[in-house]
Each structure stands twice: as structure tokens, then as C-alpha cells.
Image 1: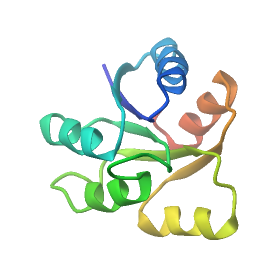
Image 2: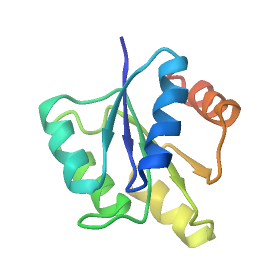
Image 3: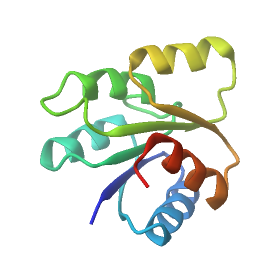
Length: 121
């Protein structure tokens, strides 16, 4: 089964996103910030990552840059899921290695569409 790492400091967002990806046939793993996400990736690299931007300890952009420098860190599809909608934020995310970008709030249809667009589903 493919694995999806859901990284967000909001427990509610993690629960909702995990439920959606589980219904899409993925094993959902959760992390509360970029540090926990990095450690999770060291243990087992996921197939796809839903990543928040604004988090304590290590934000999403910092985590993404670190991820892409890890062995096999270029493999996961990374989809930012955030309230940051400025063109400069989107550009920074894509330059750092994000594959897609979703604005909060999101729903199951939007996540399914992004998974299909990136070829993970």
C-alpha cells in the first residue's frame, strides 16, 4: 500500500486529510511539524506528502528543502496544503521542489484531483 505523510500542526487538519487519503487507498502517517516529518522520512520514505507551510520548529518550506537533499528525498510527490496564497509563496514552494499546491480549505475532490494530476493515483 502506498503511504501518505500528512504534515500539519493542526490536529483537525491532520485528521481530515488522513481520512481522505485513507479513503483513496493510502496508508496515512501524521507529523505535527517539519522536524517530526523529517524523522518519519528517515524511518520510511512516503510516496506522497501533504505539507502545511506555517508550523513551529521547522516550517514546510524548510522541511521540503531538507527532504529533497535526503537519499531518495526526490521521490515523494509533495503537495503544499496551506493558507499562503501569494504568488511569491507558490513560486518558492515550486522552486524548493513541491509538485503541487492546494489552498485551505480543501475537500476530498480537490485532493483526489491533485493526486491524479501528479500521477500518484
